[in-house]
Image 1 (cartoon, rainbow, N blue to C red):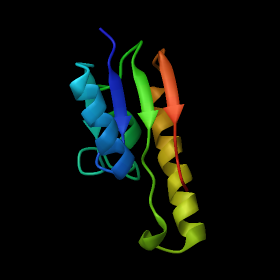
Image 2 (image 1 turned 180 degrees about the vertical axis):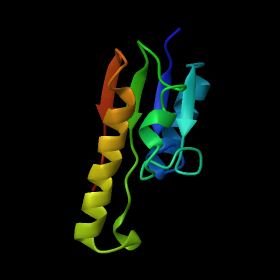
Image 3 (image 1 turned 90 degrees about the horizontal axis):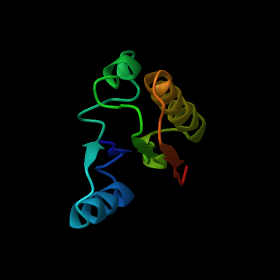
Length: 102
């Protein structure tokens, strides 16, 4: 059975989304940087046990301006997207949603 995978589940939008999914009984996996660091070299391979064909991916993860210089933060946010793409390249994702304020 497909599920919703939420990257950035501990952020403001992520927490609200997880609450909505739970209230509606929608199967989901909440991922935050503590459970999956999208900047680590093994982030992509570590996703293979979590993401399966038909799953919906919601990408909310992003570093915010207080984490460093704007250019450096932008590069790291792009690197997180690259790791996500690396992790899902072998899957037939049902739907992919990207939302960011960066």
